[in-house]
Length: 325
Image 1 (cartoon, rainbow, N blue to C red):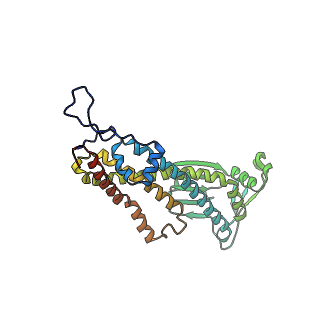
Image 2: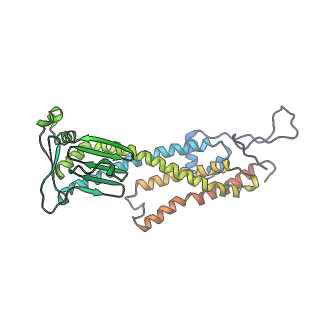
Image 3: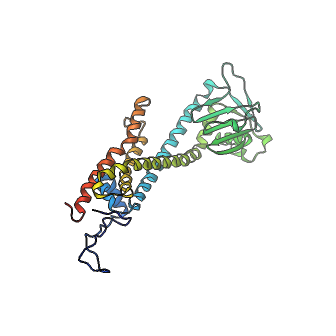
């Protein structure tokens, strides 16, 4: 019967003929491949998932963390750019639906425009309000991300982080975006008026684009890391009992089964990350019910692969265990 200590597997088994204090007989303990070679094997060779049971947990944990970081960076930058593109399209249509506004000496006023309304957006994760009555406060922003524009200030909210920006500074940004660099240090009462419409908003968005992409990338990077880590943890916990059952003749402990479950997640994180990156192409399902169906498949995909890895481990460890064939 094989044993699974925390040290590299398989352990040396006690030789009845050896004396106390002498060297114990048994098969030599395999040495794990170097990091990048091990990573390549985990990505391309399914048998390596099973052989991960032979080494301490850190030999699969570090490759998983490395892959999560590597996949999260391009995903974050890619979708940050897409979000800014969506905003660019939205501001290009501003004049069709919303009344223009005037920034004068750091004070905002609404200009008349028959048939159009004051700017207000309310999306599932984002909201934008313009309120010059003074009745609304940042506490009225209920979505995870939001923006409130009052008569003199702009309030932003990203999760629990809040920031207040005077509209005089926003007015300077509009002027800088239009090429008026001389307005940077001009007193507020001498700032040129700015009409907030599609043209000025597009100029401002292009001016702030690098900073917006950087800020959004950092936020999305953190969300991607949490998403991949959470998925990997949940699937590893679900895979481990099945791997233990398939290896019950070896009395495989939970900690060893979790090594195999973690190893299985490494290539799946890469595949899922690539499909998410190209989700605007034919590689990804269309939105709606079919998208929900495919998302569920991807969530559960590690389970059959984990059981397959458990079966491979059963064959591999049985062959390598002394006294068993």
